[in-house]
Length: 333
Ligand SMILES: [Zn+2]
Figure 1 (tube, rainbow, N blue to C red):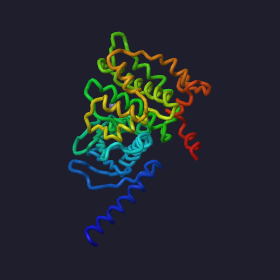
Figure 2: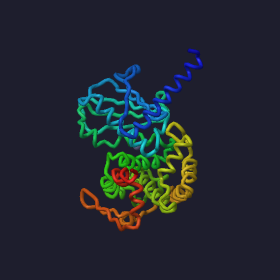
Figure 3: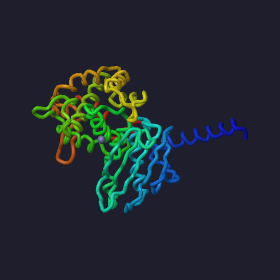
Figure 4: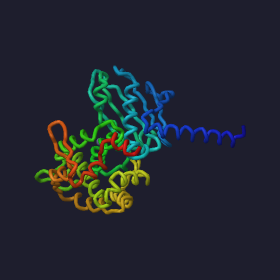
């Protein structure tokens, strides 16, 4: 076979593989391929996700569960990310699983851009005695992968990185049916108030407490999502802005001014929501009447669960942000 024909055959083969795995990424049937481990690594696996590749390496150490449940768990996070963003945000994403001796509990994650030759690199510490239930409860893996999908920011804009990860993680997991809409809205209605400005707090670019960074950032994202949906008659949402930012190359391995990302996001939704909100929220504390927001969305907190009020004025917006995935799938059929 000539070199050209050999290259062509390889391209056809690669394309066939890509198509196959892209559809599987949504169906949850992920095909991990065991590959030769890198130096200092006990085992390595690779997963094709559309045109992108996910590499998972296991550092030496024991895990009671073994590797398969961990790969399944990472696979769920990948499916959630693909369901939200339509793709793996980076061409090559790497997860290093580090068994932590003598411990159980939910994983701990840290993520960097452009590390060890990977555009997006996440270190996932998993306790040796972690149980299946603890793994099933874990939100950290998806949270860390949301970080892959936004350009790196200066320290004073850290709130948008953590706010997006806090807000998008459950919305991505509800799309694959991993979480119910009730669970997502219950947790948001219970926790979002932690982002409200406290006495003496300034805008999000100036006050860097845990509450303002994670939940203040998430509150910015939720209010932006609602505003985009109201302005576009629910045709567009924050999701469209974020997909456009990733589409323009705005991923964790890039350093962008925040305004550049927001301008691209606004263009994609045909609104000025992100730039207008940012101008208000960056320097001054913005109070949100969250009780009114929940009432308008039709979310009533009832102990450990939530009641939805179908007659509430923003019911359609609530369902578009996080609706029951089984109902959505049935509606699509
Ligand atoms: Zn984070």
